[in-house]
Length: 82
Image 1 (cartoon, rainbow, N blue to C red):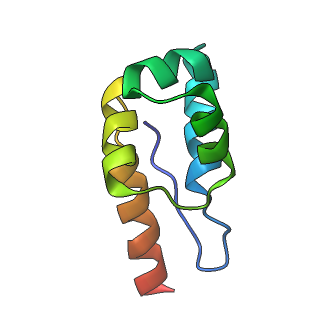
Image 2 (cartoon, one colour):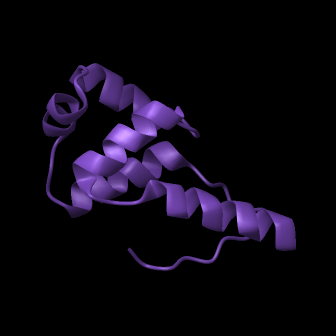
Image 3 (cartoon, one colour):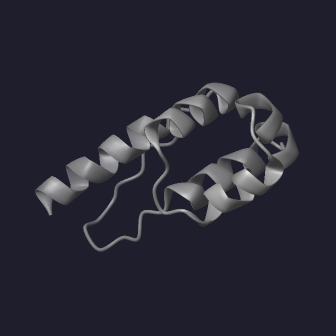
């Protein structure tokens, strides 16, 4: 995971970050849906959501072996300092 600096005015969109990480790994929405026990349609809906529920984010983080919570924390820290 790369360290990204976030600015207060940046449009943080978790669904798009999930979609990008999935693509980076060369995986599909169908694959992710199987991993988190939902439908591909639910994954496509997740891509459109700016924020994702904690249980869903936890399952996606495990499936992709990627800590999306760190990205959320980095955004929160940027919000506090800007």
